Image 1 (tube, rainbow, N blue to C red):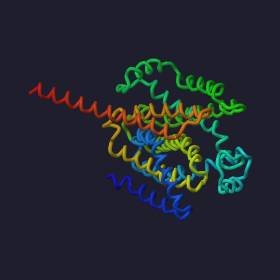
Image 2 (image 1 turned 180 degrees about the vertical axis):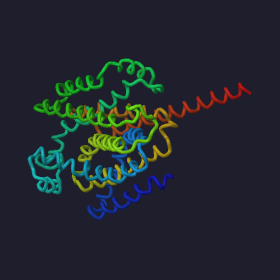
Image 3 (image 1 turned 120 degrees about the vertical axis):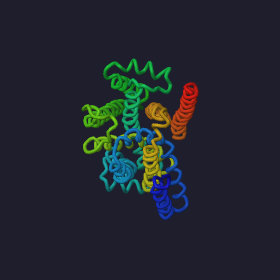
Image 4 (image 1 turned 135 degrees about the horizontal axis):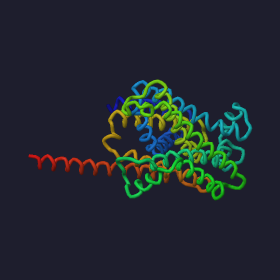
Length: 354
């Protein structure tokens, strides 16, 4: 099972590292490996959240997520997105943006590819931060039978009965970010990008729920097919794109070479995140360890806050990754303790009956 799920990722990793070595020698190989680990560290919570959506889709769409989806992840977000941002920001043609990318240079040198992308960071962080914040708010404001940190989740669920509270919170945070965090002359950019991130989340969620079988009185356990599965697939791709913002921008602190970034973040990191997602689904891990979904969403909330914080402050990617993994590990341990407690209670009940 493990080899069948991760075999493709291991093969792609080997090919990617060889390609990085042939392209840039030992340094290229090392940088690609570092970026792969960075992406996996930052996106572990992404895999858990993806699994909550992917488990509702049939085998065909799960396979599509690993094939077509990975092409979007590698060539869309990790290669084309930075080029698009630089092209739009600097008013360059696609060819000129590619040429500038291949010239190299660091983010502290004006006019370089890395510097232009870094200058666009407030807009990227505002979009991604608000998208993820709204996702987090939607989760914690919803009533659930099972709660993890009950002392805070239950009060938030009660408050969350107010209509559109997630949207209201996100709009308030956009205002605070623009007034307190935005660099001089970037306030309008932060507001526009934040609102666009909020609208993107609302639109994608609305389209996805529009085809949800449960919404139309169907079986909530029914596997999604057709339009419902397609909309969930689109939701996953937008979610992955949003999660990748911090990794893509942070990668330029390590290297500005777009080829190495595409290999490290895309071919290695993104492929393993997708395989991990499928593994969680096929092993029914989220059903066995019920707090993992909660831990992942709290990690998303932390990531959203940190991403918005990077509009003004320099926050190392290591800090972001460690906070996310800490939430996941804590949720996993809590799930194990719960399972043992439930099992012990079941044995005690069985003993009492006999």
